Length: 203
Image 1: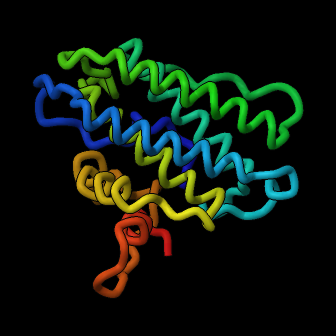
Image 2 (image 1 turned 90 degrees about the vertical axis):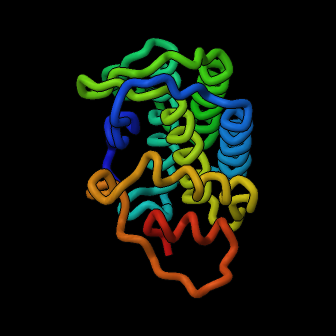
């Protein structure tokens, strides 16, 4: 995966029509953010340097990327525009500091999503993207990267099933390039969590 603000990689809508967020969207995001926090809570200092499921990234890299992504989505929802990249984080990186930063990003995104107005959209590369799609992206980022850093904790089935259903609205073959590996083929009957991960190139 590459370091890129998640809003920049989404499939833009065909028009800027209103696409109101629904209560179920907020519930999906809340579940995904809770899962990410639970996964991060299992990460200790000795885990930070080990490889994550994101190719080429350590657990520390993945947690830092997730925090940056969630902050980007939160600010985008609150302001209506994708923010510039923040300066590099100063100070030592520890498991505690990474969990703290992630917790703050989660709180900011939860607050921004709860305050959505259905007519609002975010400017992405000169086009308008309905806020609802950013909520979906935030949920996918949280769930999948939460699994990346602690693979022993499976993504809950109901959450994974909902994210699978939403995936085509934010990811197509063009936007996949450079972000995710090609889908992994699974035998029939695999649970939703495994199918979600396979759809995003994780074996």
